[in-house]
Length: 113
Image 1: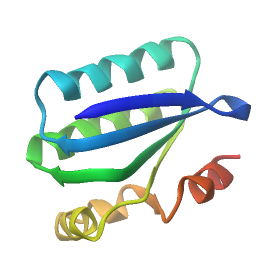
Image 2 (image 1 turned 180 degrees about the horizontal axis):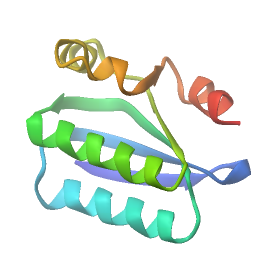
Image 3 (image 1 turned 60 degrees about the vertical axis):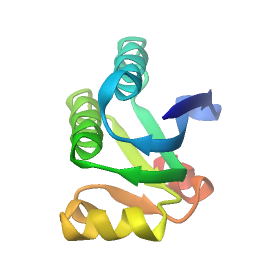
Image 4 (image 1 turned 90 degrees about the vertical axis):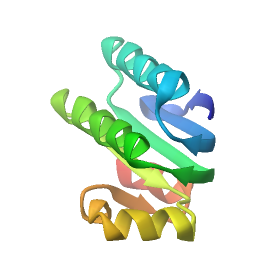
């Protein structure tokens, strides 16, 4: 899993995730980075998942933990560009009802603004 981040106007942080979200050190690195940003007062995030090929139960757990961490600081986390394969998994697990999904990063950013 590769992770890039950029901050947009309004303090919105976009995480671009590439590869597989399957737990392990890479995923823990994402969690650590999110916690650092929360510590700096950031509370609006978008996960751009256009390049996510696969996600397993550990990966889903990390996404849920991230959402909970953001909600604890009265923040918001949106998910954008989910592939049909990942969407099917979110639907099967009913996590599509927990995460706010958007077709594009632009739509997610508008929803946060």
